[in-house]
Length: 125
Image (cartoon, rainbow, N blue to C red; front, top):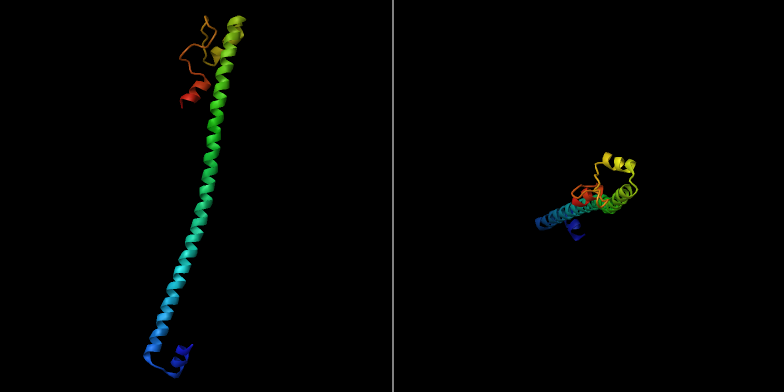
């Protein structure tokens, strides 16, 4: 306040330089606060994008987990159908399995070894 009075009266040069120094300090503080606000905004945007990506990753992981479980069910279902086809000598079931690429081992009633069913292929990936 005293500086303003001295400047108004036409005071010395030191008072004028002090006022200019205060202006530079004010401008630097203003610039730093603006940069801080910009950085906060960028942080918020990146945090929100990270949440969206994390939700997508969680959905994909859930799909993978469910695929493994369904693969096990598929293997068990194929084995039961193959055993039933052999035990009951059901040609329709044999044809159905053959249409889907599954050959039956007539001695055991199980699908032939080395043949990939839907579940085995899912486990291998």
